[in-house]
Image (spheres, rainbow over the protein chains, first blue to last red):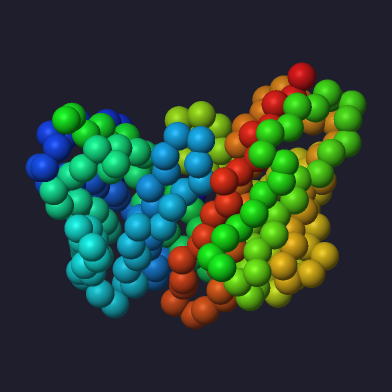
Length: 111
Length: 114
């Protein structure tokens, strides 16, 4: 079936640098996308979301970009901090509130 | 209050046991979810309730039985589980809005089947 996926399993980034995490999705019917952060032993934590009628949305140190033409989603984290070390998932919402997660991308911040 | 509370945090059960996982939220959300997450994998959707009615069952085995007794509570009844069912079980809730809205997750129940 259709699914959401990520390109890179692990991203190592120097503290203070910017991070970019990518996600490819295939369900063209999905109209809402979310980035979650999950730390070890915890549940996923909402970071930022974007609706399909937008191509960019900014939060505090985070930006999500949506390219519907190539079905691509990215998360940019500015000035990465040690507390940003976690697994990041993109998720898409389809019909009946079906929220499906992508494969996940481990971010490791090097002090 | 933006919290989804799951109990217990940890559960060890035998294959012949019956147990229940509980989830509670007081945000007025009318959609509630159960996910299963294995180590180093994304959460896998199991069930979705909308307005206290089951709207999605992702072909989950009948040894998992969900229940939504009211708009604040969601249970997952477990019976005759297998060791491969050991995982982190996550509950989430969200508003039911056209166009989507964020889902809030609990901290999960770490289940071990022995």
